[in-house]
Length: 194
Image (cartoon, rainbow, N blue to C red; front, top):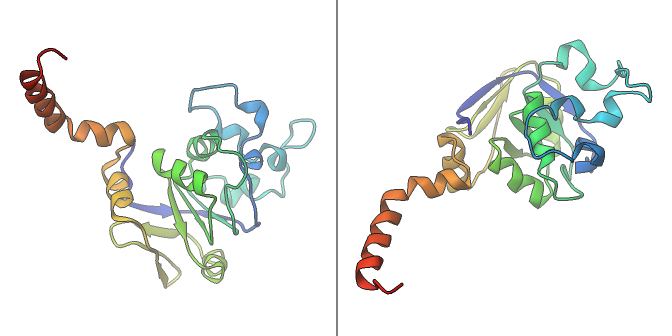
């Protein structure tokens, strides 16, 4: 996983409540276990018409938001099913951070597992950030800033560390490999019959 320290870039405002995982990546695109290529299907039903043509009014189709790396959302972002394809599609599109007033628990956890930083801020702060130009997310300082304004966000220390070091669950285990190997050697010596 790519480490996350600071991120500066365009923030696309999609301030709708209850953006569910089926809206993020519809079910017909869940046939793959490969994480790449899903970005083109992100928000498929909003981005394209019935003929597969881009809807020019949709936020991510507008020229100023095509290179967005931050997504600003409304309450209960990522609700619905537990599909991990939703953060995969965001990441493949280029989104590394989602800022919203609240998140569905499974989606929130899946973000950390895939190197996306979900930030919880009050709706008034999210709306305020939506009026600014590029934003800077500083994970070590736990701040989001833009246009002279700055907001602090809370984050569990363990989650912060895994993002800063670019560790997924396997990476966390491998970081403890010397201790695991030492335990296994000691256990094998103490209980050779196992």
